[in-house]
Length: 261
Image 1 (cartoon, rainbow, N blue to C red):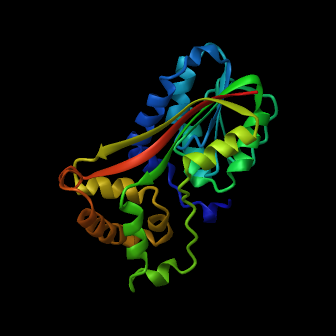
Image 2: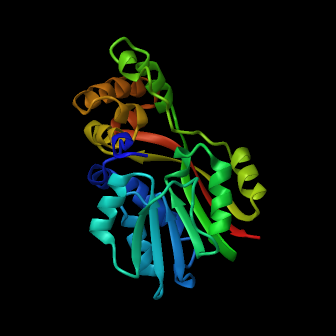
């Protein structure tokens, strides 16, 4: 990825990622981070979760990687500590580590990566024998993606999205099981969680979606909110009143725990 192709903004993401942070900590509660001396955080984003992991560890090192130069730059400026916390630009499906980590974590990232087989083979290589993996990511947002697809075909937006290739993937449980087991992992636990996330106001929900929804990141910044307003108009017509009144979204997500065989 070049800087020109980087549609992420580390600072904007930091302002709109409290849900992702909370969900990562929920997953991390399932393990004792203090047992691991060297940890890899795949898709570290703004680096806040990587920092949290380091605070729970004994003397050791955690490395956060992200494909976005903006994310890595922001994380490095905010949280890097020589010998303790490091950040590198790297794609989840092109890991460059071998037998280097006791634990590999990944949160709110795997739905972005098309080459899942390469992701899991890379994680297997990166882990030491018996190393653990903990991953959490989104699988679907009820009615929202249908609203995005419909609005994207409208006359105002279609010309701006003609060259748009949506990088967001909706992985099924069955597909993920094949990828993980097929790359030499034993799965200890695979949870499918469906729950509502409330943002309180329509404006807060729009800011959240504008910070990461691919179609919104693809159009010029000056019309991004206009696009999202049309999407939310349609979305709120398709969901129940509780989600409308509390500016919420119903999502399905996975939390996966396993170890390298």
